[in-house]
Image (cartoon, rainbow, N blue to C red; front, side, top):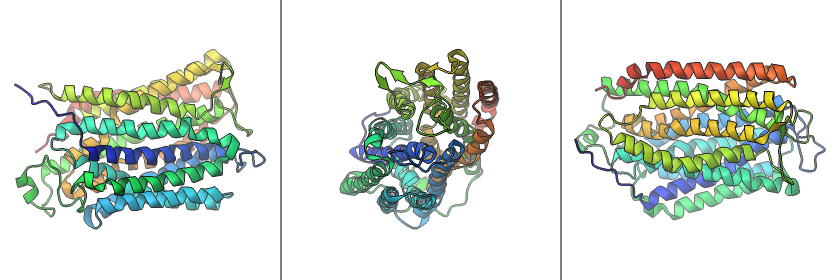
Length: 453
């Protein structure tokens, strides 16, 4: 049986949306890193700090991320039923810009909370809805996996620039000034999106409940937004729910891995930074933010490669690897990254080579890229039209719950005793690997939910 090849040429509007993520993620990942370090930096530091503990730094950074991952569900509902996604997106960008800019004057937790609220509300209007608009630009649903994998590379280009270059301004200008730069990036992002609106055509001009997907048949669209859900629709929504729940575990351990990299292995102007790794390469002391940069760089490289791989696999008679298998593989890889972290600490005896942290980041990044970019594609294909925005936002709820959970686990495992660190993180990594294996084994049964009629 012949399979028509998927056209790989992307409309310019795709790059407009993808670049929208680049500017936003540049600001977000810079701010996420700075919060974790800034909170735990002494108040007497030249860069400015809040002088709190590393456990508090982990918690506040996590809650900042959590807030930005719960609001897209609300923003998705707004874009589903009431306000055009094309309006929601730039308004969200401007709100985020206001939040980051406010942090320029922040010197207390109350200001940090206000910044978080504004950034979270803006993210709610922006995040899932921009992905939804981008998905509407394609005629063939088989092109979505590749498109969203490439979009993920644009996301990580932003992260890479922020955590590699913007953070270098901190020693000279301080944390607050770099927060202001993050705010200006979002204001420019809104201008970019609106100025290039013509390239998006009619995509997203109406709420998502009006099915605008080009690859859906006219007959199916004509059924209307108020059509009752079929049994197949319900089973596909269950599939979305299950993948999201398993991804909670993935994101919990994935995000928590940054904390030992910053605090246990990392260095800084505070009592909680243990520096159990050698960050010096030649005469250059590598910033701890480069742990983030390594993740971003790996994702940039893997995005197009995995995008083409999924397209080739989809062209096979038996099709692509299922989303459940990809999620399981991602979980196993991030579990192995914890074992690598422990092994590096054992071998290094307090002076672990930075190459161990490179390996940890590499394993985390491959695990992330195997399934995370495809969440938007998975939902864009399976979700009933009237729930599209809500379910695209629901995908982000996994990260929200992971951020509520990991600070609790991190606080329990936080220690300056190497043996305790190695035991705690080794056991956690092993548990995640086992859960990934269980999901892989059960995927044959779960896969049937995706194709239910």
